[in-house]
Each structure stands twice: as C-alpha cells, then as structure tokens.
Image (tube, rainbow, N blue to C red; front, top):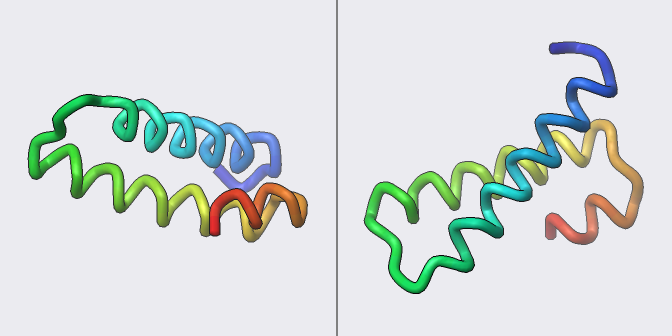
Length: 59
C-alpha cells in the first residue's frame, strides 16, 4: 500500500480503532496493547501523508 489514498485509509482506520477502544468502559490488556500500537501507527502514517492538523491530532 504505497499510494497516498491507501495510506490515508490506513491512518483513518487506525485512528478510528483507537477511539473505539478508548470509548470502552473496560479494556483487556490485549486491547490496551492494540490501542497503543494503533495510535503509534496512525500518528506515523499521518506524519507521512497528512496535513499539519492530522499530525497535531495524532500528537
């Protein structure tokens, strides 16, 4: 997935997954790990293909 559209799709889906996990009342240790990894992935991808606003939201 090297095209910008595909990278943006990945950034959006990982960002949304983080928020889905954040909204849970309780999280398992595996969900906490997933949330951390997804947040890092989203931030990284946005830093490559996003706007300054996208990057700021990830920080």
